[in-house]
Amino acid sequence: MFIKKTTLFAFFVSFSFVALLATLPATSSNLQLRQNEIFVAEFTKNEESIVTGRVTFVAENPCKVTIKFYEGFTEPEPNNYQFFLNNQDISTQAIQNLIINPPETYTTEFEIDKTLCEKLDGKPFVIKHKNDQIGKATIVSVE
Image (cartoon, rainbow, N blue to C red; front, top):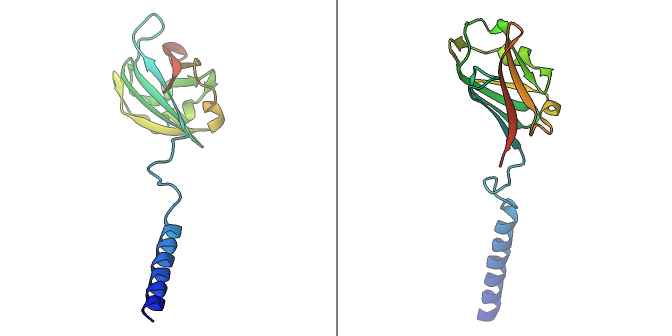
């Protein structure tokens, strides 16, 4: 009788352990690999740019863009600036929430179509003020 109870107890313990394991997630969300590519355009003063700052792209769906500039913005009206990603005008999205406190901008985030963020490595990002180029930087991938 003792052997039957011990066997039955061992069976229930084993079954409970298996049931507990079955309820655990296959992988922890903290351990999943990041699938999104990140790109940056660093603006420094040079012959093509009076602007200093950074544009960061996170290639998700939609693509997330963060801009922050420290120098080069001479007036507070966002509608007088244009932003070009690889010759594509993204000004509408970029200036939607843009706040300019000359000579800098506040950090601004916006979204663009994911297709614009494909194969960005080596592509230009250009800023214009009233159609005059004030900034140009090359986009690079962040490892």
